[in-house]
Length: 217
Length: 217
Image (cartoon, rainbow over the protein chains, first blue to last red):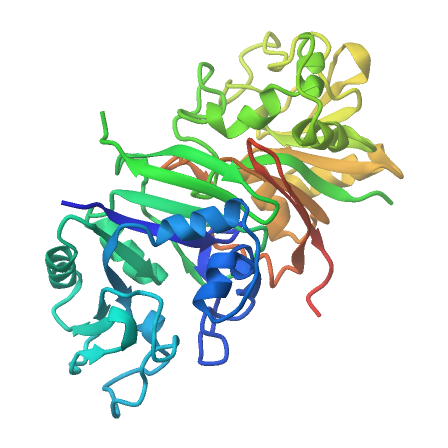
């Protein structure tokens, strides 16, 4: 069985994984652009979004690695799109165009049922109304020997941390402050949960840390 | 008038400035040694503690800078020592031996009066029972045109953040998790307080960020 991992997850100096007041204009919340600056200039991100060129250093290596061996994704509805409440129609098809960068099944947590959405390039969005446990079960089945990646946002990562289901987290601390927003670790004791930092590399833009759950001794 | 600054203040990935269960054996709390790893190997820290050699890179440059132009320090009692409650006698003279690395007046916040303690090399510990505002007033007077440095710990930094009295913070994010302890920024909105990151440099050990209070626009 593969691992369950969080990867390329940006965190501000004051502990937020997203800024306040998320909307279609500010999908990551107000002030959060700097949070993801480290990834935007990478060759991998540029290629994924139809651009050319880009950096090939530490930030790019971690970006590439974050997509390796992923057999299924889980994400919260707010990461899928800005639509709230019951789906008014099937017009919202994600932020990523007709060929999203996932290329595997993606399980979207939502309270509102919707028919699966098959995109180009192997991505199918499945809308899961049974909660995080059902999403994990389905994602694990879909992933088989490969890993399940928890994409985000903060509430989704927290839900799986609180269930003790995450094996590995690659966090990227960016030199920005957000002031308010969603605090990734508030009330969660990572040491008691068995996490340790086993790898860290700094780039000019951010500090990359890999935490692995190794048990609580 | 000089600035009021926090400098060389280490922070874990999960937002703690000190670990749990502080004691004489673990002055920074359990598990917090990695928090300060970046500074321990620097030439400046080695020289301050009677050692020789040490690194001369980014970490050392920031350590040196943190002592520049400081005319007075403020620290909480727990940073001064592990003794709690009324002072049983005058035997505890700080963690730093007979010549502490301050060389200026140091104002120690405490609820329990004690005669000032004059050490070698220009450091005098003044014990302030009138609270953070009195300590700041006395530190500013002592510092004159130079800066007041808030040493720590977490509660002391928070007290001055909540009063809007801090002009600049040099934070050092270390690739460790502490799980619990004292959360530096919990409930404090740094953006509303006017802070922005104006400088950041990563070393192999940590991410250095300098936040300056530039107003709230």
